[in-house]
Length: 70
Length: 157
Image (cartoon, rainbow over all chains, first blue to last red; front, side, top):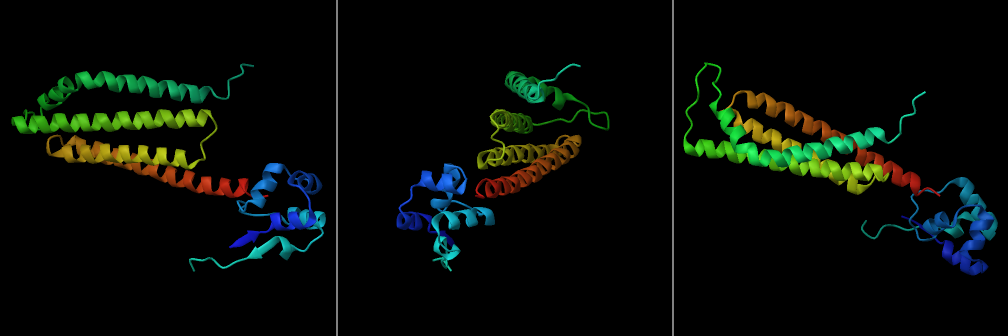
């Protein structure tokens, strides 16, 4: 499964959810969905904007973990 | 030009469903009379079938079972329409309601088919009702798929 490490990166960059939402240009609700790993998909444009706002790489935000069941 | 309210067809459906519900409640009291009338009808040979008391009771029981399923299905239909009014069609709850309605219809069809021992025509009625139930079941599958597509769309950031 894909894990979104947005909270880790936000803590590293000391940026709040509100500030990031404003910088990325998406709603707070959508950013919350992403942060809480509820998202089913992410657009390249959103990912690009997040990486730009947090000054990080894609792999800093997204991580692949093998399912515990398999 | 006459402007028709967008929700008018929905309100018509809700009204018809409620009228149907009242009709079914009314039928609870007149079902024995109606069933006895059907029992008294001559068959295709022009003769009346002589039923034992057990057979008569069986028909009455089946009629009430059909009525109960119709009432349940109608109630589920009303709840579904109220959900449509609140724009909550593509939810797991709505899928469950449509599934319930399809089971009610199929159940009624099965009872009709079983009644063919007494009324030949009820086999064909039952077959048609089961087919209708299957159609509703397909609609349920379609809505189920639509719910999953909508969920994926809603959770795309």
